[in-house]
Length: 215
Image (cartoon, rainbow, N blue to C red; front, side):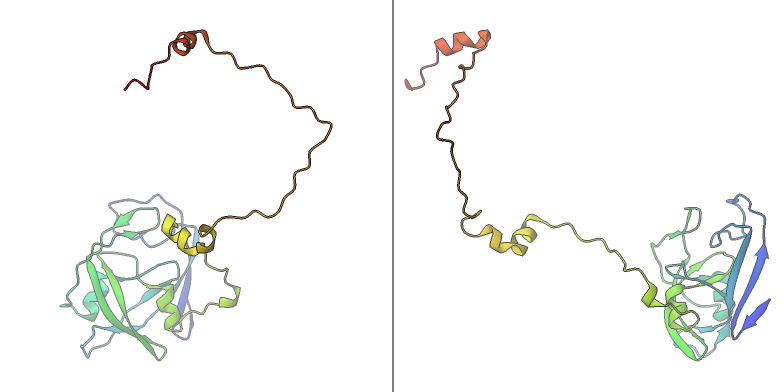
């Protein structure tokens, strides 16, 4: 194991296996692959309005959209901490979902920086996770934003009212396509087409049309 400041990382050789639904070992937050690198840190955490700070080993996961805290790590911080209920569902690797025990606000500090963040508490996992956003705010990772591709966001579909309001000048007054001259050939002869024939089944109705003027 190598250590740089407070950031530790280790490489593991593994044999890829199928996930077992009854297994308490968390492939929940880990991609199954033969070789992976885990970046571990040891920040101090505490519950707001409490005095005691506790050191917890956590994993940096820049692919995670939220922060996750194992129940056993929460017990280290404060065994009597109260969780807030949540209807959130966590989508983990393998497209499976887990229901968290709740959420809690936690103060976290490392490398002279401190933040308060919301953590989702789960029953069991390989490690508590720090999201990419929180890791960047704590100075654990940095992103060269000059190399980022512009993010594409979904725009709300325009309604009829939105279009009329945005292009108001198009819908006011009479339209004008510009000046145009049609030139005719003086020697041209107009064609004379034969009259269209009426289908046999309709000819009787045309000979005896209803008298609409009687009423």
